[in-house]
Image (cartoon, rainbow, N blue to C red; front, side):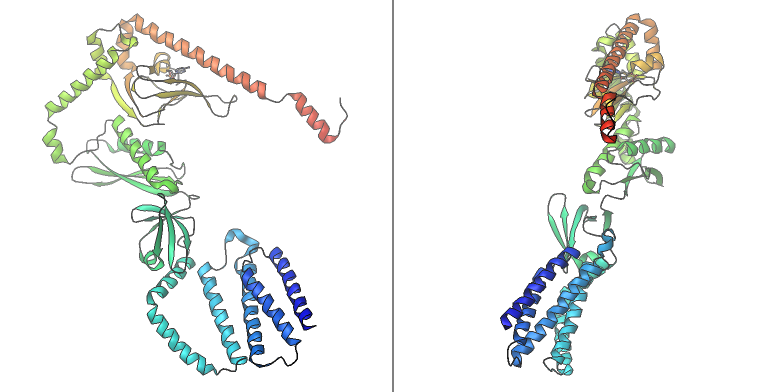
Length: 495
Ligand code: CMP
């Protein structure tokens, strides 16, 4: 009979467990619950057993009461502290604080049980208890320091699991914060375990989780001779075009100070790419180099080195070498084959060599432009926005060394007909309309070669766009399809 009574209690409590898991899915301490159910069933069994008394009885009652307190705390945690009605806001108390509260509550219950059920004198518990605690506290100073640092880190929410921190010159993502340490994972897959106390006193930067943009600053020392307005617009363009830069907030440039050998500028850009900060910084720094190079702004060596090496004669020799190089390059192109060496050298004097990073835009569709580009090395992609035809741009061509582009705007004055971007890092020679004008007047062949290319390309572009339009028309659902769907939805008769 007593056995059946105990069994009945066990089944009832296990049934209650199923209901509890349904209403509070965040209730996770199943082991404590099952232990409690078992202890309660045992107690029920003992109640029905004659002469249930003595120390076994007291232990059973104390165990059930203690486990009841534990289960009630878990229900309170899952139903209130974890804020299940507003999960997005996160728990009311961070994990370490909940653990601390649980320890306190259970210690208080154990104290009351010891006094009330086992008849212990409170003084017998508190005095040695305090002494033991003091001794433990002394012995475990380091552990406790980490525990309290962990609680402080969680309560002020300096960072959360998933955030990226800048630690010892590299980024690492927080996995979790335990009683002893913060665990982090670097991009190289290493797991770092930093004691809470170290993190609490270290100067760390929290880059967030990538939802909100964070700012990065790039300092560049540039020559005194370069006008600040030009430097600023060049750095801004580099910042805007770099991969991973957020559109908002917009990049900013500040002239920071006048140094011994250069003026220091500070470029501030924002990004959400916190998962690969080193790659992001590489992208921006690389774009800065390319943008400055194209504007002819050199990142200076210290002034002393400059004076020592760069005599006027050296500079003149360098320029002559560059002119020869461009003239040789142009001489090999079918476009300029009819030109005399002298004319080519005049053209080369006015031309500039520019470097572009992979994916940088050389020419943007619809912008004004009056220069012709000859590709020296690398590859570029020509594409055109085809609004109303496809959602993305249509790729018209890929051009490589020896080929040219930009002739349409140069010859007709119309805005750029397509966007040209670097498919690989590329070097180009830029020739302005002003430099080309005398040659166009003197060489009718040059005009007709350029005009032929222009006409052929315009025709090819039209063919490609027409092909896309036809494909778009073919894939658009016919009116009949919609009619059938509407009729079936409203259960209308066939018309
Ligand atoms: P421009 O219009 O000045 O600027 C964009 C350039 O892309 C254009 O000159 C041409 O040089 C080039 N371009 C346009 N359409 C094509 C095409 N179909 N094939 C190759 N190049 C093209």
